[in-house]
Image 1: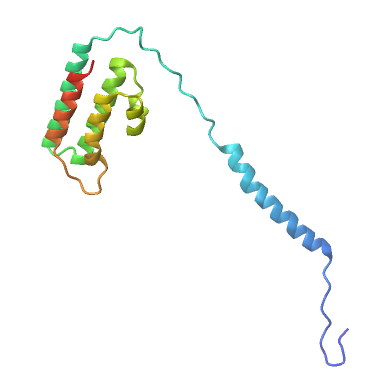
Image 2 (image 1 turned 90 degrees about the horizontal axis):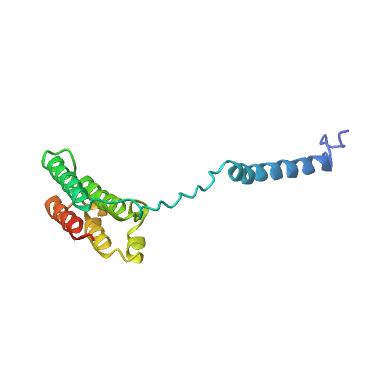
Length: 157
């Protein structure tokens, strides 16, 4: 009922509306917490591969990687690979060589992990390739990087 001046008094809302608002906020918060927990990927441990029993023909392996390193040089010379891509490919080749020749899981390791593992020829060679792989400005010599890769392959035990 309007007052003497034509205005209505404030309407009193039921406390159930405030309770409903709190419940909705709690449901939203639970949604943003529960859904990511339920949908995240399970960590899958990669099984360790014991390659100690596998015979490795190191001279043949060296020859294979010599050819692969030469292919990277040729691709760069033809303009198919940038300096950065060539350095990245050479680094991957070194890591794969170490894996194939001795079972070191180098393709999955960071430089710090390689240094911790005391695989000095590999970690030194990968460290020399890092500037060409990761610097903001592409620079470095692919020929020098390929020579570093070859030295590592031929000095590997």
